[in-house]
Length: 617
Image (cartoon, rainbow, N blue to C red; front, side, top):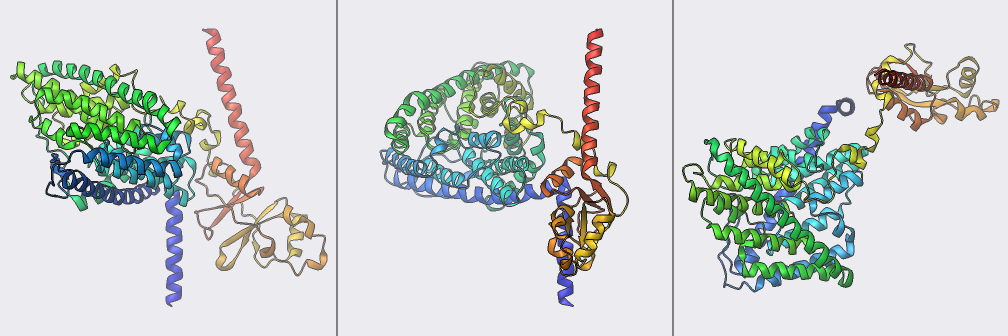
């Protein structure tokens, strides 16, 4: 009895899994949840490691008292003796250790993109969604060292690469197609960003739009949203739901203030050209020649030394800088200090990431954009306090506008800021400033591997052609008559008789319990039918091949792939995607070819008609 129950349970699970593979939306929901859960756990470990090590290196050992944002009081250590000269020592060692492992195991990643987000974009467009597991592992651990020791970099890029690597790994284990692998790559990246920034919708939208300059990956929205929500839920289970930054509930109430937000867009665009220009110059003119002469390890060591030196003299440029952003939102940073922090962060980030050290550009970009907006907000409030009554709101708008301009992502950053401020009170100025920044920053781009649209992506090269067979289902073309079914014990004599009396060339073979177990291809047994002494010794089970079948709701393109893979001339049609389902007919390979030829003729006729109309006009 228990054995039969287990068999029934196993059969039920097998049917459920088979049905899940056919239920497209439910399957992607499941994939998104699985990837999001793994990405959320990875984000938890990643965040905790950075927080503890950063407190240990910068607070306990170097004696620095850096402000922490409201949502990141995870660990508290009493500051040690004030020794800022230790910061360049830490960052140099981090650069050397990082450089050693990158040079030894993943040297190709030095030129793979701006940061982890850009490397994920490259994997989507040019690597079929394939990410070797060693890449996010080494780069992720290296970014922990970089940020914890004071390197000017963010967590979002590395965790996006880690999440994307998880999605790619899962897709490979499930033997999914290249298209599905790319979608899970984006889902993993969305989960990582949604968790680490605590903005599930903004993380999902950023992941699907940042890979293009003027497009977004619509197919990835479902798994990306599920992954981001799941990862966010896992992350907040351990660390709470409080936003990173303590932002008041700002409201836009005076239409005259839009003038100042337009000025903000101009200032943020100028800061964007300075930020990207400085980064590119350091990367190509300073560190690239050094890397050619000294190698990766010493180049990263030099970058760490320079970044740490800037941080020792100007602590506001260290690490991600969210604590300083929060102070700016609360109006506690003077105007001249805002300007100095923009310049210092730009230079420190260029040294850190321009040399090839691991980390993300997202946090530095938000820092520079937010403080650039804060400059405008402070000045507007000083001269027109009745209109610009909330200077802190300009910091939030500057964050979204700046990143939208340099990353060509108008929706994700805007939604992130709305999630961060817990409302849509700044929606109008956010939309205006982001649109203006995108228009003004046409000639500058943060990411190297972005492409304009899907038509420019190698990943979508096949989409430029029309797959005619996907428009037709098996139900339209299969023959509704039951084919001859061989029993597993049918002898070679029976098979030889079939060859003489049937036009079919492929026959399903039924095994135990009435389930189909395989297919017998006449061409593969033709040489045996002349050996009459084998007629009673060889049975169908001995010479059958693997089972292939189709269902009425499958499209003819899927059927064609099965014909190509199997080599059979006919395939049985089953009522459900299960080998024990009812046999309802047979699909001939010739019918698929005829459907394709008919589709080609219709397309040509439409083209000829269109040309005729154009000629008449």
